[in-house]
Length: 175
Image 1 (cartoon, rainbow, N blue to C red):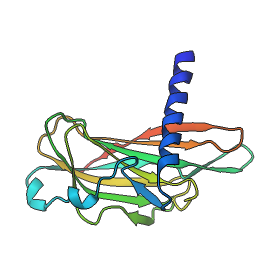
Image 2: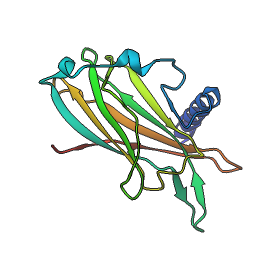
Image 3: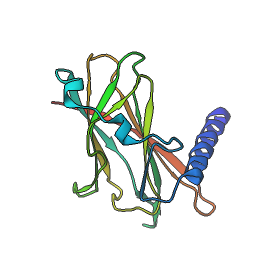
């Protein structure tokens, strides 16, 4: 139990440091790294004929306490290419609110994610447009079926005396 609590504290500290070092924009991409999406632009011909799939990732812009008070959360989304040899092509990253309405399209063009690379998206704690049932849909393509990408979200709040954090993982959507 002590190791798990210590590990969780390290994760919270890491995410908090990332948040402090980021610029003040509505949504920050590639936290702590200055990578331009334009340099990652992919053409459909780059992944034509590859296996295409979709992944659903639940996130929470806020959660409720037992008295109905809501706590806003900062959300860090990680898209991890777990393949050591294949490039991942991300063709869609769409953010939806609790009602299933599109909040934002993150990509204007497909991008590539190098082997073992992670790209990140951030939803600021003050952005509550998603609600308690927010989610992302990611479309992606890879040449081989093994080692699908990993989609994770870390939600945290460090307001007042209460600190909380939890994670969620993406689930594949059937074609």
